[in-house]
Image 1: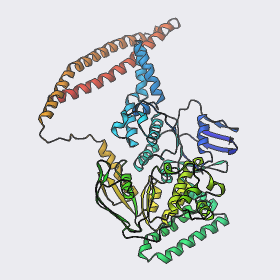
Image 2 (image 1 turned 135 degrees about the horizontal axis):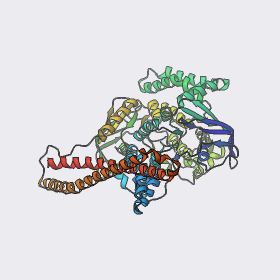
Image 3 (image 1 turned 135 degrees about the vertical axis):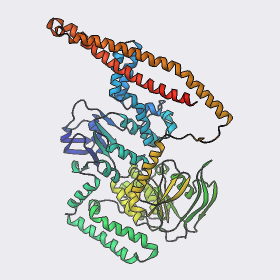
Image 4 (image 1 turned 30 degrees about the vertical axis):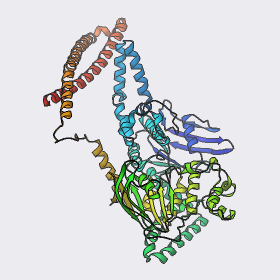
Length: 637
């Protein structure tokens, strides 16, 4: 159990918690939510012992194993696999002790440690580590690569894998999906649902929270309020509280009136029908979520360019990629009002497609046709790196609109919650979420008629994501969206394209269907692959290689048989010694006080022999299976 008792926490001039109360029971899966800066990460540091409370206390059971996902990784020459295995600290301890025992010739201690290795699943550790890397979308060859060769985002994934590798009682995850694609997010979601310990999860992904958590802790106004259920349950309960406030109710009614007016005006108009339907969907959801967001400081939108073309942009039989085609014969026509979500495995080419549409990547073949009035708004995965850290949000806009007045710019930035001096501060002082808002503001200011958004929600909190959802629903141009935020996809796109196997094709289904498609793909990938050249005549080189492998297998048979026979002999010897020990223990006189020392020694002999027998029998079984398999292959040769 984790318990905060009248706990207060001060960081510099800011008081994050003031006499906060919180109780989290064992095995609960708890989502920690709240605006940026309220102290979510500081709560984790309290639990890890990196911070101390200013008042009150934090109570934790003793001898707990706590795993957490580090946010940074220093350069290391260790392989990705070894780095992930380091997460299982007990495994590393036992491995070191076992090596020392074997080097010193202490067979008794070696036997004990081999038994402990089996008890902590040490012999399956590498297999489990490979499964984690695979689930987080690492490629098969990545396991042997040094950590230093991975980019920052992939190093964070390695940190996540390391945390998951640990046999922990408490698992602390701070924004684990920020650097994941949709496939890896869904895999992590499934892994966490089966995690047996206590989970504390900081996340701004509402679907992820709904799927994983049993409770939500809302940190606000220096307090910690706990709600039972997932994020949607929290949202409804909080909405009920907020809806009791008359001022907020009136603001909600005003929004409803605006939506209904839009639907009445444009429902029958073909060019606006999809936007009208989006308003209807928003209206249907209003009772559930709107009241929980009426205090949002964000009111921004994406006004579209007055001039449009039909189509805005088209690809015709285009091969896309760098030196080699990643996507082949792509034909795509984007018209005003198109709202497309891109689905597909990591590395299949989603970002390649978007970069080809923006002309950041030249086509290898085929044709790209731009409409006369095409105006693209592009948010790339690494968009924040393109910002001038020394410039303010106001200066960024002034550079693209020199004639705009300071008041116009200030009013506009206010809708993104950059008020007063914040609009004039250098971007280098901003958090990741604030920088992302600056990038979105620059796109919105330029009034594009085609939005290409590649993972726009990284670093955005729940309030900004909600505002972004509403803004995209109101956008009247065309939209292509890549995101691991399923709520954003569900509420902002009307159709999906599947990018896989070098093709771009329409995906006939919704997000649930895609999740099933992913599960099927994983099953296929995990099945034993059939040889590529099955049912084909082998070339001379292949026949030579087959003969070499057959000879190699035959050469292994004799030493393997000897090893198996040796283990069998040792098992017999151990069985005889155990029989002798058991005969001694069957003698009732050995339990007399005068023979206590002898009894202790005999019991130790029994425990040691039993442990060694288990180790030898396990090794014998493995060798026997290996021998039988090799004999079958040799017979087939």
